[in-house]
Amino acid sequence: MHFIPKAGNAALQALRILREQGHQALWVGGCVRDLLLGRAPADYDVATSATPGEVMRIFPQSSAVGAKFGVVLVPVKVLGDADACGHIEIATFRSDGAYLDGRHPDSVRYTTSARHDVERRDFTINGLLLDPLSSRPNTPHGELLDYVEGRRDLERGIVRTIGQPGQRFAEDKLRMLRAVRFAARFGYVIEAATAEAIRSLGPEIHQVSCERIRDELSKMLTEGRAQQAFQLLDETGLLRQLLPEIARMKGVEQPPQYHPEGDVFVHTLLLLRGLPPGCSLTLAWGALLHDVGKPATFRRAPDRIRFDGHVEIGARIADDLLLRLRFSNRERLQILALVDNHMRFADVRKMKDSTFKRFVRLPEFDEHLALHRLDCLASHANFDLYDYTRERLASLPAGAVRPVHLISGHDLIAAGYAPGPRFAEILAAVEDAQLEATIATRDEAMGFAESNFPRP
Image (tube, rainbow, N blue to C red):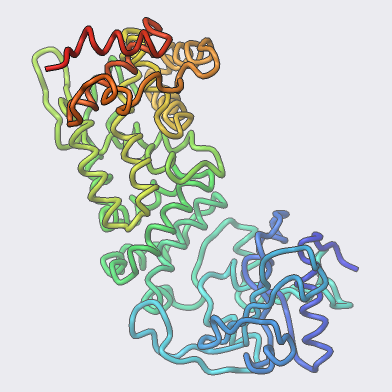
């Protein structure tokens, strides 16, 4: 048996079962690419001569979610791994019809030729086939079938389309973003003709849904090579098409005493360089957008360059962008909170206890800290305020940041206060006093309220 990671056992079993039924079956695409690169595949895809109907008869518990394009999902648990979750994607060898919408073929033609199936795929590095059951292995994982010189491109570090790049991208505009993502992920270069086709067809990227664009950009930001991805987006012209708000950062000067690294775009790229693989989507987009308000607020004052109000304006610009890309409300609000609060660290040494405690109990405050650290790392490299915030937070007793409220609106009513908007002001002031540790009991809280907010 060739070397196959344990996670591939279910996909191996799928091949055996399909072959026992008289069909061709091979691994294809990203799993083959990753095995050759020494990476653990995230999933395994199977290509077969069996039609979707035949696949579903062989695997009765399968789902025909992609049967229109010859794709069937088979649960891993029916392939010998009863405790596992997930599916194996089994796709019928096919050739595609015209891509009238710039994303999907209007028809597919099933074939028994693995070569024909490969020729309709996107990039050579994703067009490799592997037979892990072969008795003629030419790799440690089995026999590699390479009809498009994908192995050569893997070895040379090149992202190149299969066939004519203009045709491949005209068929599916999302492939332009995928070319950038794969090149960034693996540290490859985009082959010259492929890159030129992206520059030429870039304005057509808007045919792709906002959700798919958002997802591709989010992967670029969170896979660990965000700086390279956004440099490539800029070089190919896709950045100004998709994120003109980010492209406007280029050439926007900053005060050198605070930002010796360069302009706003350079600073943002350096933040992206610091994002670790697997970081949260919200932190990644917060890093990208934290200074998005600077181009609109640039001002050369007598003393230095200023960006008055860039946080407030940046939050509005970011909100429009996030709505355009259709982020969930939870994600949007957290990203906006990161943009809206990133400058508050400048004041942490001067904050009253109550202000500091309210600051550090922002939802996902660890992301605010992480963004501030990245911001420092990408500019002056002074981490004093970052360290101070962590030390002050760590010094607080358990429960000090979110203490149990001493009184409620019911207590105010019982004391003779008339319900109304004033309640929020009273209770907030009482909580501030509690956070400042000037009161600690219910009686002290009521006394504070009566002294500072007399009943009419």
